[in-house]
Length: 582
Ligand code: GCB
Image (cartoon, rainbow, N blue to C red):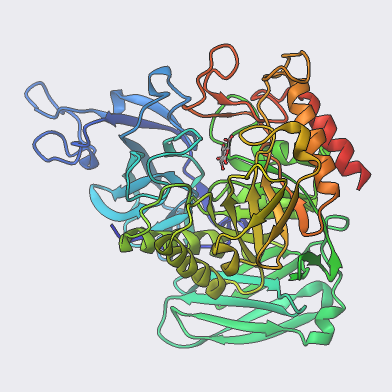
C-alpha cells in the first residue's frame, strides 16, 4: 500500500502562529479485531451512521461506543486493550463555523498513527498511510462547509512480515493515534516545507517547497538578528535548495552547542504565507575515528531513550513528556540522546535544541525486516523521508540511523545502502549511522567487520558485555576496533535491575549488579582509541511483552537507569559520575 498523504513540515511554527486547530480530546472508538468494519453489509463504519429509528438496521453507533483520548495509545486507556493488536476505528466530529476560513487550504495533520491508517472525511476515503511513527497530512480543502463533519480514522497495528518494524521487537506495540492531530490552515499557495541548517563545512543551507499555483514564486528567507534577507525563486511542487549568506558571514554566526544552545529566529515567507522558526547553527563531521562538533573533538556522553512517557508505561507525546524525559538526561550529565528505535515526537527534538542535547534519530528497521521485498524498501524510504524532512532544521539532530541490529547479508546490506543513499539525498549535512549487532567473541580483542560499517559515517555497536555476553571480570580489558577507521559509538550496553532490589554485585537483577556492569564498562571505555561516545541502554524501564519474569520484570525491560515511575537506580549515579568526570 503506497501512502496517499502529504508531508507538511513546520507544524510547530504554524501552531504558534494560530494556523493549527487541535483536534485532540475524547474521540469515540469501535474495536474491529477481525478487520471487517469497512464491509458495507456488516457496518461500513467510515459512514459514521447510527440507528435512526426502531426499524433501522445499522449495527454500530460511535456515539455509544468506547471513548479514547487522542493523542494516546489505546493499550493503556482500557485494561482490555493492553494487548490488543488489530483495527480500531476512531471517530471525532468537527464543527466548522462561519468564522473558519474556508477559502484557504486545509489539512488534517497527524503527528503519528501506529501503524497503518485510513482516513475518512464525511464518509469519503481521503488518505491512507503506512508507518507508525512518522507525520502525515491529508488535504480537506473545499470540504469544510459550515456545520458538523465526521472524521473517521481506521488504525491497524497488527505486526506483519512486510511492515517496518515487522513481527518481533523488544518493546510494546502501542496502537492508536499516538501523537497530536491538528487542522492546519494555510493560504492557497503555501510553504509545504522550509528548512535551514548548517552544512559540515559551515555553510548555511536550506530548502523550500512551495505548494499551489503554477508559476515560480519568490520566497524570502531572513535571519533578522543578523539583518540578513535573501530571495529564492521557487518552482511549485519541487524542492529548491539554496545557500544563505556567504561562507564568511556564516562562519561569524554564533554556534549552537551543548554548552551554548543558542537559537536564531528564521523566517520564510511567500505571498500570504509565512513561517517563523528558531534554528541553531553548528557543524558536524567526522575525522577518522573522531566526531567533530563545530570542529572540536566531541565525546558523546549519551543515553538511549524509548518513546515511552515518564510514568504510566504509555506512549510518550507532546512537550511535557519531552521536557521530563530530556530533563532526566540533563541531570545525568548527558550531552547526547539516542532516540530509539523509531521516529520520536517532534517535541523531543524541539526540546533537545533548547537544552543543548545532541540527538540520534532512528528508523524502525529493527531485527528481521523483509529486506528482499521491494514494497518494504519503498515504505522504508517513505518513513525515512518523514524522519528527515520533519527535523532537518534541528541543530540537535546530528545522526540519522537507518537500522538496529540487522543480520549481515547481501540483501540486507543492499537494502540499507539504498536507504542510506536516500537519507543523504534529503540531507547531506548530517552523519549517517546504524546500530550494529555484535555477538562478542570470548576474545578480549573485538573487531567489527559487518560490511554495513562501510556504508555509514559512524558505527553504532550494541555490545552487552557482562549481561548477554562475556564475563564481567574481562570487560575492562576488552578492546574494540573496526575495519573501517570510523568512530564507534557504543549504542547499547547495560544490565537489568529492579529498582529497590538490593543485594551483592553478583546477584542478578539487583541495582548493585547493574551498577557493577556500568563500572566495568566505564573502565573499558576509558581505554579505547576508536570510541567517540556511548548511549547505554536505557534511560527508563519500558514495557516489553517478552519480559515476563514475575516479581522482577512483570512486562518491563528492566535495563533502565530509572524505573518506569522514575525512581533512580544506583547505575544512574555511576554513569552520572563518569560523565561529570569527563
Ligand atoms: C537490544 C535491542 C533493544 C533491546 C535490548 C535488550 O540489543 O536493540 O531493542 O531492548 O537489546 O534489552 O535486550
